[in-house]
Length: 92
Image (cartoon, rainbow, N blue to C red; front, side, top):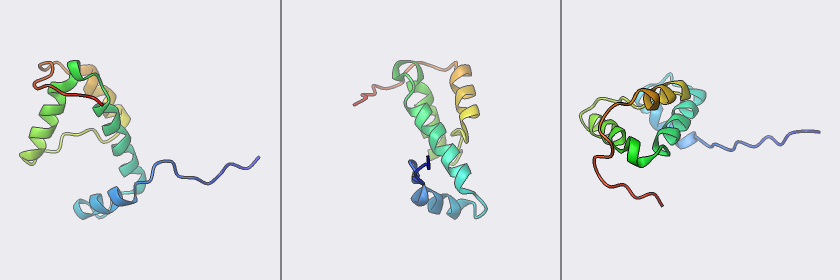
């Protein structure tokens, strides 16, 4: 049985944007970062809303602390000790 050669996670646009910052970044690194971010942003809003705020506001200040892979995303959520939910988030 032959498996379909289908890419379920298309990252071409993200790869182009990431290569503006780092010309040597690979497709796999971009994929890992995307999955890690999706994991963080789908965490419980009541518990991790403050983490989302911290990541966002630090990025505005030029400090990119977003996780780069699932290992760092899990570590970030496991060890998060900040305030719970600075602002109201509404998941759709």
